Amino acid sequence: MADRFSLKDHLFNAETVATLAAEYAAGVPGFDADRFTRETLAGFPERELLQRLDWMADCLEPHLAPDFPTMAEQLEAAMPPALDPSLRDDDFGRFIHALPGIMAVRHGLQDHRDRALDLLHAATRRFSMEFYIRPFLNHWPEETLARLAHWAEDDNYHVRRLVSEGTRPKLPWAKAVTLSTDQTIPLLDRLHGDPTRYVTRSVSNHLNDITKTEPDLAMDRLQSWQSEARQSEKELDWMTRHALRTRIKAGNPRAMAMLGYDPAARLSCDVTIAQPTVRIGDALAFSCRIEAAKKTPVLVDYLIHFRKFNGDTSAKVFKLKQAVVQPGKPLVLTKSHRLKGDATTFTLFPGTHLLDIQINGRVRATTEFELVAP
Image (cartoon, rainbow, N blue to C red; front, side, top):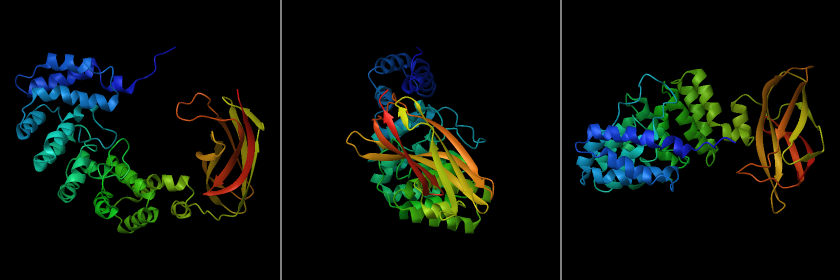
């Protein structure tokens, strides 16, 4: 059996630490690369991914000047060349280059705000500083937002992306920020017309976060951007779909309409399950037949209402098909959904389960099946 992939070992290992040590040895006079490498690797086995980053910072700290302004100069001197500015997407950088962000928060947040923000500006061109700008937003909101407003016009797209990504209300893995949408939306207004997909994806993800608490605000903004025509129609269409994905999954009627799907469309739907009893570990096979009297765009999802340990149920939504139903030409869709018994994040329990077919945000057909132990 093959060894299971380990992200922490892929990102932090002897090779990546040696690369980092060589960069600091070249940029910081007297840096003891062998000692740093030895101490860093010795502490990796008992630490998880993000803990390894903090540990690397712990090991680096004794090699740097104790006063932050000098430390910041050393950190900048050791930085590798900036990421390729000619690219437009998916150039995140390497996790080993997050250390300046950690040091900026540890040693610059309280007493060296402006110098620390300068350091983050330089560092984010090597690795995204989205985690490390957030303590500054919480501690110095007005001053940091003013800096971000300036960075929204930066020549480097990594810096512009940081403005959106660092202020996201629900950034994965990150600490919360105490900002209101009134404070962050103006930044998105500046960025939505950006020519770089890396930036517009972040803007869309930021809006998707907002849809979870203030959906109408996010949809209002998307519609106002359409009227401004600062972004190409094709890109703004993509941004709209990406920003509304959570509301689409939830069947929000306004979001459906914005993407061209009529929740009240006149159509019929039948669903058939191949076997009424399915064992855990096997596949649920089903088909559905959709008919419409006129040409009708459809977004078809299916929901499985999984039984929980206490007998309650919880529905999960899965994508099935995006299509157009033509009159007199039924759309027949089939699916085989494996009901994994060995999933690490979700436990299946035997019992009666419901299957819904959702079209343009509305449940149009429902049936049930019995899930039994393997």
